[in-house]
Image 1 (tube, rainbow, N blue to C red):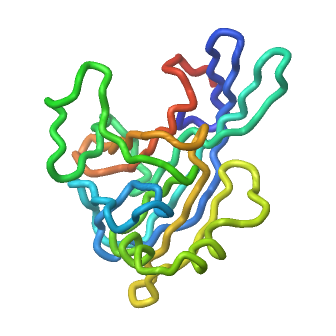
Image 2: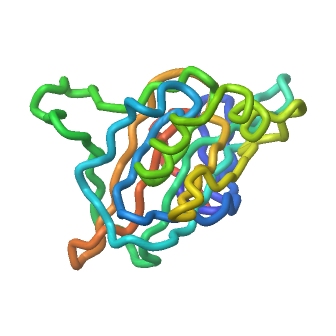
Length: 207
């Protein structure tokens, strides 16, 4: 899913993956939050794994879905916060305080709920700042009258003191619960955070 130009087939459906730059995220504390920031951002908890404060690249991975007799459509398949441009050798489910993998079933996962059709990977400072906004400014900044095609990215600085920003993208098929995974390099350092919007079935990709 994170290979530009990959083609994934599932039955009579083909998914063609394309990377889209979505902007740069400012992390003044290095605490990363995955959430739908337009719904109850004050309750979104940061992941337990943190990174060095800084500015990091955000990429949206869009799947063009081709189905025989049904034309094609684009959906945001994943959102990736790139921390280090190094190979990822393992992935772990991103957790918040109190979440324990042993509590999950074989196919279970922890994820964040989406109710406004968008998701973000942002700094906890930014998400908390957005929670203090009134409804009208949120609508004006983050909800365009004409929604652009996926990934439909919208970027705004929400905490002037730190420059922390929130970048939203459309979330796959819309509302749902979506897991985030953390990638690690051979040296044990974080390479990226990736929210999977569960658009693509678990299949082998052809590049």
